[in-house]
Length: 271
Image 1 (cartoon, helix red, strand yellow):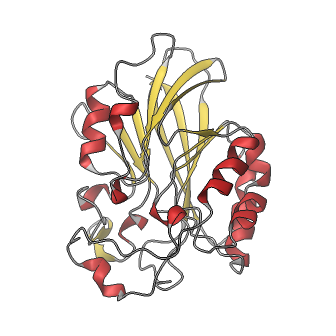
Image 2 (image 1 turned 120 degrees about the vertical axis):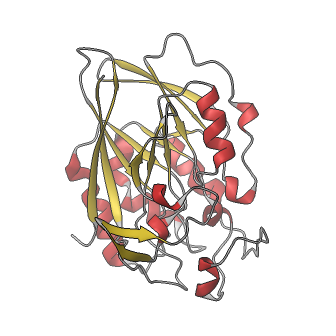
């Protein structure tokens, strides 16, 4: 196994409710040639999740849609939620890798458009819920979950107004799903009283420095504070935030320092 399994618990279920095992992955950045990563993704099924959440950036190649669907095949038989990231829409381009460590200037340089519609069709055809601009209600282990999502905030494709508002009364818990955890999205979900939010995009900082108690991210590639670059965090009374450091990298910057590829198993438990 060439990835790290991150485990966490979020106490948001009602008393006596059965636990829910959530497999959260992000930022696969798959190409047909990434055989080791494909094998790793196929192994995710052994963690026996009840629900799968993907927070985007599945693709990194024009021909990667069949590769993604094949890698996820067994997981697609399990209830799932997904949103897209910028790399699902546009192919990566060669750029200075050190630019990732500088302040984001807001300028986006796009590669060729990728077949994201084919990917969305392939995932939804197998039963996963596309919540880029919508809400979904699913029942898992006797708990009714409301999930709402936004498209990629890094490309300003997010429009939370499409899913905003009070949580569904029949739902036991409410989740938010987004690719890039920009504060405008997190704050909007907090105002609507969601219980937990899932995101990706940061790669855990991708390059981290040794630090007291572990390592420290230098950047998050958005306005999220660096101390929240990966894993489970909570600030005040805001929803729990779980950020996946992701599995892959751009094909043109295949370097991760002190931020290994990871998948997360997040268990919802009783309060």
